[in-house]
Figure 1 (cartoon, rainbow, N blue to C red):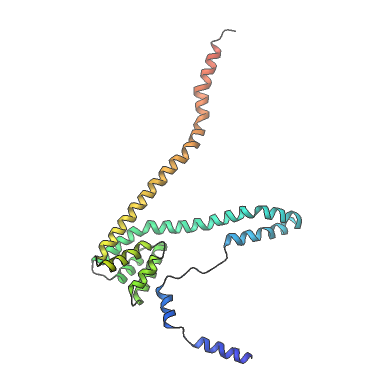
Figure 2: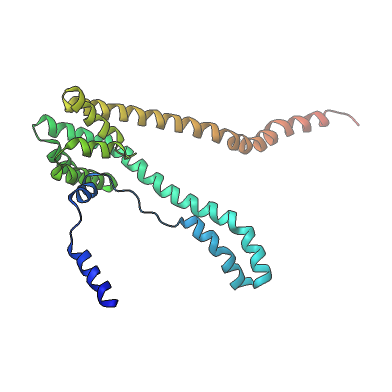
Length: 232
């Protein structure tokens, strides 16, 4: 029985995967592997830590009471990291697309343009562009690559731009330049909206800070002067 299992395992290791599976791994955007949510894991460990530190009785009570707090705190930490990464990609993408347009206008194919721009772009966007260049280098049909890029939330405008250029026959450099300008306008609008929200949110704290000073400088002297004018 053991010999048969080992022989089957050896045959399975020697047989290569199908060409379709290999092409799908290379061309299609990889899905994020399923993993345990850190917030759920931390929440599950809170009662255990409470029992170890406080004992069975109080540990269970305190641990159950702290589960929502720990879940919310850990969830915010993970989402903030994802938001910072997405914000950095969104900030760097218009400039990177300008470089892609320059390479396309100079006569370079998209695979070379993305490879060159990925080398000059730091951060997570450079890594994403290098992945796109690698897929274009081995793809027989670029449409498959652009379909996968269009499903990526961070690079969806790029994938849609190249698919639109292939479908309409328009110069791809013009479409990518328009996408870069649109992304730049959207980012400016988001920054203006964020600055306006900051002004609204700071109005109440500033009012609370100035209210005691206004009361002491404007109201109190008036009340004191009024009572001082009375003759008792």
